[in-house]
Amino acid sequence: MNTLIPPALSLYVHIPWCVQKCPYCDFNSHALKADIPEQEYIAALLQDLETDIERYQLNNSPRPLHSIFIGGGTPSLISAEGIATLLQGIEARIPFKSDIEITMEANPGTIEAERFAGYQKAGVTRISVGVQSFEQQKLERLGRIHGQDEAVNAAKLAHQIGLNSFNLDLMHGLPDQSVEQALADLDKAIELDPPHLSWYQLTIEPNTMFYYKQPTLPDDDDLWDIFEQGHKKLADAGYVQYEISGYSKPGYQCQHNLNYWRFGDYLGIGCGSHGKLSFADGRIVRTTKVKHPRGYLAAFDNMVKPYLSDETEVDDTDRPFEFFMNRFRLIEACPKQDFLDTTGLGFTAIQETIDWAIEKGYIDESDSHWQITKKGKLFLNDLLEAFMVD
Image (tube, rainbow, N blue to C red):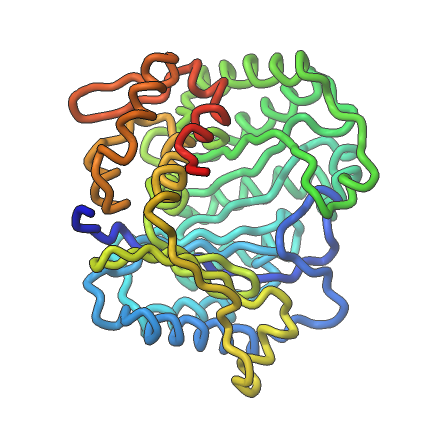
């Protein structure tokens, strides 16, 4: 095995509560039944981080935090003061890069949007606004609690306060959505001129309301028309697609997501959060934290149970699949050296599969890079399965 060079380090923070559960959502989120235990949960998050730092000896690590992503649930239910306390506590435990990107998800509801400036003052550099649609009927069908005017106002406010960047989350392929409706939604989003757009297709996930009572979705022909015409609209408006669902103006790619897809490292704190850590001794460890808020907070209240729910080492045989599963989400070419550095493996572990993929026309190869082709994207599942070991 080659020397494993630990990559950039990020942090994911999970806030599990939301006002109500959306019918398409399979994230670890819980509808509010009372007030959020804000102070107690933030204290638990910081203790969770401290436990990870000690467990994985990160207090001696030369790697400062590259990015932070605060997701949920609905993180914007936490006050600006609470977010300031959280970020100050994180920085006191692990240093920040001077140009750290700190993203926070937010709903475009009036109360949350009014807090944008407070979040910025707390240290948030980037807000991701969960718009999903600008059509009122579609918002109601998706279980969203904001209206179309609130979505527009939230984007305008994000511009006004001068954030480094902000993102609009927009879905297509919604229940009973026509091609024209999907493209009209996209036109409205482009008109608001966000630096970054996450434009993704609704999929029906297990253990969601839509899974048990499936709505009528656009057929494959309509979905292709939506994507093809929408992609052209985005390109014409100056947006560059850099991953499957990510489009940005030049210079505004989401650095946190890029670190995920480049097989970077990340700590995960909060209910059900996931982490991935690489070590110079060759280990790659994946972590999962206690999922339910009650159990997670119990770890803080009496430390009877740890925050850690599961910890597994990634076997050498699984590393090629995990590496390419992430890298092939990106449009950019993949440096061959990255495979050596972040998996600790040599090329002999994948050469036979690479040769097969080139012969099939799924990837192109240069002396220094691999590039997934248009055909490779169409047959991505077949390509990735080839890197799996039975």
